[in-house]
Figure (cartoon, rainbow, N blue to C red):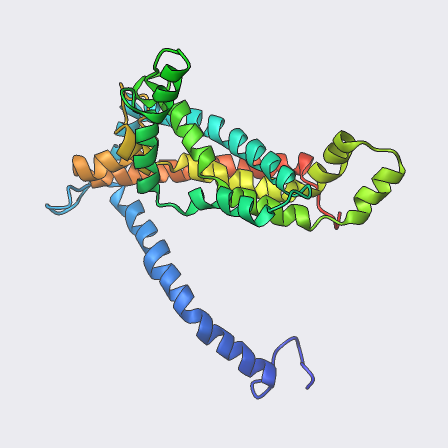
Length: 302
């Protein structure tokens, strides 16, 4: 049936399909508005108030934002979070990619290895934190037991200011099995004709890796790196369970500081202001990554 003036006739099959499409999408759109955008807008309003969740909120204007600019722990938490992201994002991006390349190189039992690497990512973070607390325990932990058997001195790991963030970063890499699976799916989609043509030109394995594998995989590398960055900036559970922000605020992540202000000190207005600052920081970092992607991400249709 003809479509006039780019409009779908009301009695057409297309119009009926469009109507049912909106009907099926309605619950999702409604849930997004009610449970995501609604609370976000409400938190923006709350960020301009003093509210302890007991007494009525009192409007204070930009007072909460001025307070967080003066609070030294805000700067500490931002530095800790950025340090953690600076460690985890490159480690997760590089290590998981190399593991995926090794698994895609015709190794036998790939499904078994894929399962082994993926399992940590589906283990609840609370359980993983309890496991790594045992591994890092300075008295009877698994790592220190290994060190003693090798004649090496025991280490404090996450219980020292210097080792807290690196220890949590290692745990984050261990939990990144889903990234390995995503890389594997992308690697298996690379056309074998590219490698065959490179073989005919006399390219070795290293040249094939850097001139075929890496360029073709850059869109997936970009996606995984962006997800790792956003996840690192919102890290909370590991530090909450394993270190509580210590020792000496060495692992006081921004989200943990935000949680303490909201639910420990009942400063919900101040915590809402902190959450919007975090939103702006993540948005700026995401925009920076997107801008840099123009120089190193290659798409097949370009």
